[in-house]
Image 1 (cartoon, helix red, strand yellow):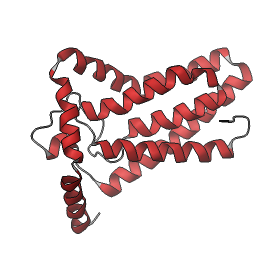
Image 2 (cartoon, helix red, strand yellow):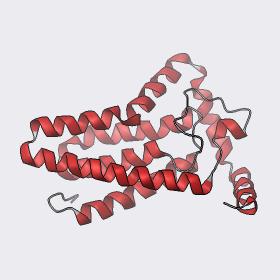
Image 3 (cartoon, helix red, strand yellow):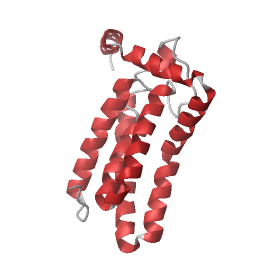
Image 4 (cartoon, helix red, strand yellow):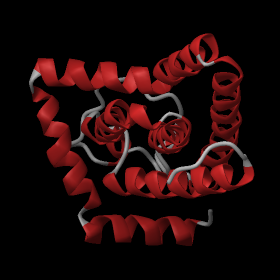
Length: 186
């Protein structure tokens, strides 16, 4: 990204109040219990939760579960390539690096902020998993919402990083569900 584009994004960030929302959410972590809770949610969103879900599908679902788990795994690889490419292109600094009032509560997995890979994966995995197993919606949607919140609360992402990642996750899962027969969202 050019220096001019970067400067433009920074101006938009300041005008939109995106960093202020991040700062307000980040203050929730002043309470140790809240910081720990969101740190645990965030770490589960690193992949452990999703790998566990795929393993359960494989272990209990027979051929149907294997197909669902493979669908999740392949979509996860595409999501990984998408968010890494976007991060390299946008190079948006993380909130705690750009604003002194925002305190990072866990170590980031990479250098840049846009988009939130955790949120992109959580949204796409949730949509695909409930297409195969609709009964999981009552567990997966709250977990996905907590993962998205954790990224802002912990000072790792701006709200716009999370919103954009959620939209990308919806688009990715829609394409994935269209390409893979056997799962229907509706």
